[in-house]
Image (tube, rainbow, N blue to C red; front, side):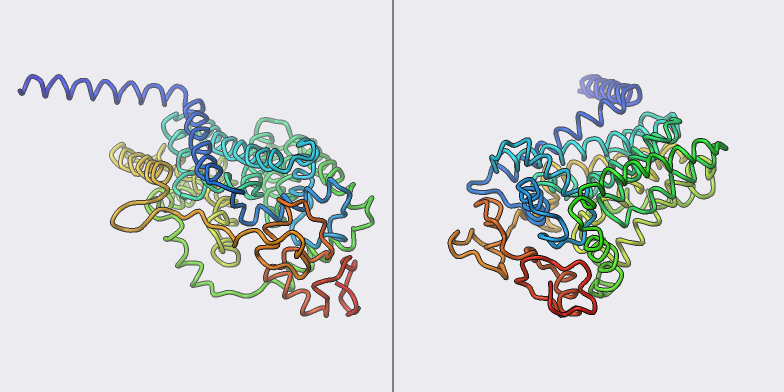
Length: 445
């Protein structure tokens, strides 16, 4: 019996060493495989349900992209607080779909899933480059799954936060690889997906300046200008520049509803759940390694993490995907920490990270007896196609895309921010075209 146990222990040890060797030598390949399987599983869980799939707020980006591909003008015919790049991407996908709404939605799911996979691999690539530690790099990439929503949210459809992460990590990677023009393009793309990502151009400019090259700084600026010009070209062509400035710049600064900061802090442990230890360890890594131990090389990770964490906890943590940008930088911090700590602490954190991934991906965050699996919910059943009129209710908003309904109001998806703006400016929820700058003119939308 003791001999059998000894042989079994030996085989287990050999297996563990073999896995460790593969991870150490090929961390990015391991991350690409795990991330692809995880995102595919999440998409299957959503898409395998009968009937039209739930889309949550992906319906906003997909419906607007669908309408833009059919000639509607963003910010004039379609009121929206987000920058234009998300809608330009979905419009391109709508065009590629050939007019088939189901194929269009699947394209949105696939592209968003690919953005998630790319983000995971880039986190690992950054850590591998900074630490030359394959295990730390793999664990950092896997830490993206300590938030259960990361693997399943892409299955609902297009979600800009994945693309913000991908563009931000790519921008830094490119500048650190002496490709400042491409880095500037990627930084502009990050802002084009979410205006709060304005910290990304600051990071890449700082990295370019740190490398001691005025030429690199200039090329970052040129790349950013070219990227911004391409994104804004349709807006200028439509004559929607003033409307965009009102909705994308003025609204977030003046009409965002207030909220209780403590409520956001209380949401954090619920959204992270069993991944709390790796997440907190990542914050420690950003502070200790990023700011103190290896500041010349890793300061950008600490600054980016601090920015996105502050935004999430102080202003914008309505749902788990709001954590995705900060999660990416925290994952970088985790990798930095793992490469610097004692082997026993390292093994414990890696084990907890893998445990969180298994619970979140395999069981959708379900860990008895502490809670149930994450639900896959959506708005009520589809509305009657003939009865869809503004102001649209939840069922009608769900039906707009699937029934390919042309909206008769520029206010299609009226969230709290939009409702606050309409109220403050004396607008009309049924206005056909949104005015360029409704402040001081209370007759329009």
